[in-house]
Length: 332
Ligand SMILES: C=C1C[C@]23C[C@@]1(O)CC[C@H]2[C@@]12CC[C@H](O)[C@@](C)(C(=O)O1)[C@H]2[C@@H]3C(=O)O
Ligand SMILES: O=C(O)CCC(=O)C(=O)O
Ligand SMILES: [Fe+2]
Image (cartoon, rainbow, N blue to C red; front, side, top):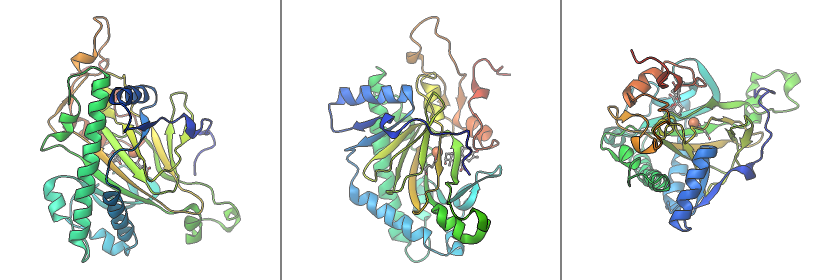
């Protein structure tokens, strides 16, 4: 259950909603401001084809409706944490009221993606969706680079690399009352179906996350004052989250946002998150162009995405994964 100390005191109207059809310089300034203050915003009028979204969503609904054994057989069989998962998140004992499908987005995995008899339909929906959200992520990164007066494509070239390491995650959260109906809770607790932790608090490791959900709420983001703000669901919008690597590249100017998902009383939630990462050997450190003043400290040392991942996957979901890369920590 969500702890009482983790109260929600701010409201959704504090979350920036950026209309991407507006003037480019205005949009880029709004994005930079949102990344600097919260590390989170929503985009509307984003030009992603609604048919591509609804095809992906329908395939996800069909997938989660299958029997568990069939879901577990989704191919190709890849190493954990990839593939179908139920409750277990990562490799270190984190659990949540969620089932998910985690897919690595390299062309080989996509070409081999199959389950049941619907393999082509499923893999084609995933391919089209990922192409569209990757394009959106690049556009957002280019707008933020422009707003920061950095050379064009400074960030997007990292995720456009042929061997970039991106992931698609489909999450399905049962409603709190579905959970209670499963008989897992004492009868005395059954008068109220309290929200439960679907996906515990964490930051996303990669550069940028582009996330969308059906019309059911549950996502909450942490504001710098420590309050948790529920994000109202809007299936026509995408949520954009700054990841750990973008915080490093901007020398802490952008905030890698802590967030979590909780279950909702009567409805189940479906979210689809695209995590845009660089290639394994990409060197990640504060960009020299960001450190403009001679006396400005460089907050992080340079590391590769492979270094980060090796370390990150040894930690629990809610742990801070950037502390070890602070320049104050000895390199040796
Ligand atoms: C406990 C963990 C699960 C996670 C890898 C990690 O070691 C720490 C980060 C987690 C996270 C959060 C964002 C994405 O959902 C994810 C796929 C990722 O890249 O980092 C998950 C990882 C996971 O579920 O395996
Ligand atoms: O389902 C959500 O809205 C959040 C999921 C999430 O944070 C993740 O998959 O990393
Ligand atoms: Fe996340």
